[in-house]
Image (cartoon, rainbow, N blue to C red; front, side):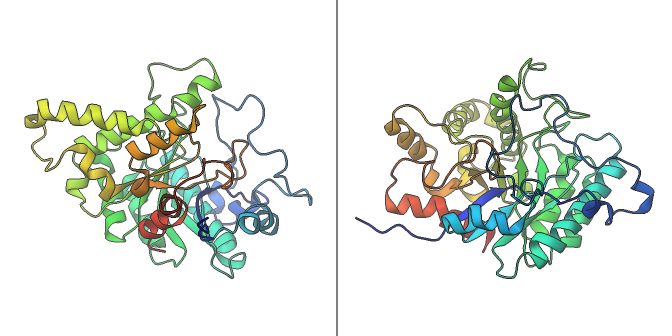
Length: 350
């Protein structure tokens, strides 16, 4: 039996402040009266968001205790690097100035704590949170953190007022390309605040909203491919976090088929839409759709080119956490190594 590689990169680990004052101290005093917490105002989870065993025994909020997180995730599974996604939930806010200030304060906090005094061994890698409603301010925030040794990507929500191929976002992509940082988007805030719902109208239930996350990602990806984002920014890299995997092959088949018929409409594209994926796009594995027959999953991974575009993620500490030991059926050694380590190492240049 082949020995599994022990190296592993987890591309979706959520952390939180131990107290809201950790964020507030990084804000201009003029913002101190404003509430700093917030998340899903329309579609709250009907039972619980986090694993019931993920709350630290010392009473700190889930995802805020570095020693407990190390014990439960890093040490338990031998994680080489954890890509941290701290979310300010500023993208739905109509008051853009405060949304930008809030994102900036979260970046100061994560740099001081999880990427600073909690990170002597460098296992934690961070994300530059932006509020994409103000692309110019987002570009300045990217520039502010671009030289940090542990900031490895730019982070935004999938919730937006326009699909991500729109030229209004070009200052963000220009900064990402200039500083060689992937642009990552995490599902959520679709249909909240100023953001539009990607599906037709507003779902009635959380299960509908959650299932439709992949629709938002398909909308953004189609837009980026067809509107020529990767021609305008040939070195841009994009990460789609927590939006599923199985939709990708059929979407690209349909897109390539239509491209053959309508390519004259988009003369700026130099290749079939699907041919941009391997060079520019990566998808994280959680939540991994698991059919009853594992053979079907393995076939889907082959069709999705998982060997080159899929990166393992656990979504710790959330209720639908994917254990590295249980998320996949037995994989060929080479595919296992690519998904669990090499794809992320290469894409994030770790």
